[in-house]
Each structure stands twice: as C-alpha cells, then as structure tokens.
Length: 101
Image (tube, rainbow, N blue to C red; front, side):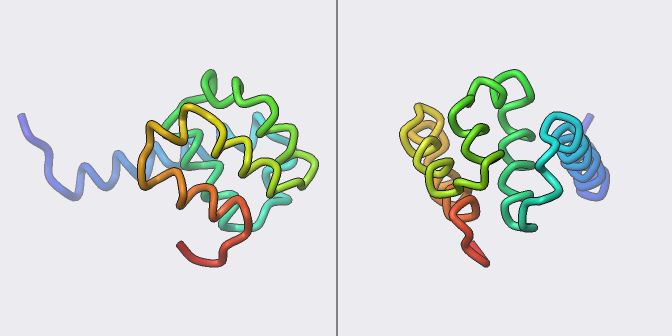
C-alpha cells in the first residue's frame, strides 16, 4: 500500500537523524567539522551504513586529522566514487570545503 509524500518525508527525516546520531557516536571529531562536512558524513553514513563506511579507513583517518583534501582524494580513488555517479563529486566537494553544492 503506498504511503503519502508527508509520510515518506518523515521516514527520510528520521533515517537522516539516525545517520547523524551514528556519526556522532562513531566519530569523536564529527562535531568539529563544518556544517557541510557534517552533511557529507551524514550522507555517506546514510547511504553506506556504518559497516561499509568504517571500511574507508584512510578516508576516516584523514578526516579525523583534518586533512580534508587527502580525505576527498581517498573517496575519489575508491570504487564508491565510480558507483555513485553525480553524488560522488558533490560529496567530495563538500569534504574539500565547498560552501554550497
């Protein structure tokens, strides 16, 4: 049975909040990130899930150290980047510090 657009948006909002909470618990440095970098991390968590995201060890290490260009390069060099098509460059741009994508 189909759900309403309002219900779909509520489910999406709840899932995004769950992804944010996962980031808060998994990455002690998450709150130190700019708002756009937090959005990028939430997107990655939302779409990959904790297990897959934790597999991006070099990316996460670079993020934790504030080496955002290196972190972005790690994403670009991954299979994920090829798979997500247009979303990849947007996420990478947010990680590099773009103010709007």
